[in-house]
Length: 201
Image (cartoon, rainbow, N blue to C red):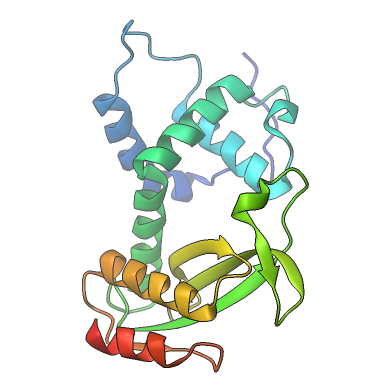
């Protein structure tokens, strides 16, 4: 097989070196029943996932020189469902924080939400309407550190109150950082219930 031309979304050698041990360990822990190693290298699978994530192309429309949907989506779904994607995300966040001379986990986070429109065909029971912002769809809550790196994410219906998002975020932050966070900054959308809940945590 001839070597393909690289896409801008492809992993660099340095990027692959950071995550390759995680995926090699995952592959070793999940051997094929038939003993078949698969037709595609793990790096190319990740390149295909990154291409789809960066361009938004449908899985069926991946370029012919990348692994096809069947192989790519198989790993994407496996890693999403078993938390491997989160393991890699956290590893990269710790790596970058340490490069910036910070501890692996933060002591301060910033919480915020954004109501966003959803695509056509999204089940109605998973959406709502943000009355204040007049946006139908979902509410995305983020907790980030001072570098802007994502610590926790929650997705609720747009009709959910900021308090629900804030409390859910604080729970995720606590679970993700194992108690290192001692302060959370929020805007006026979050009410006393979030402040009290955070103080208890």
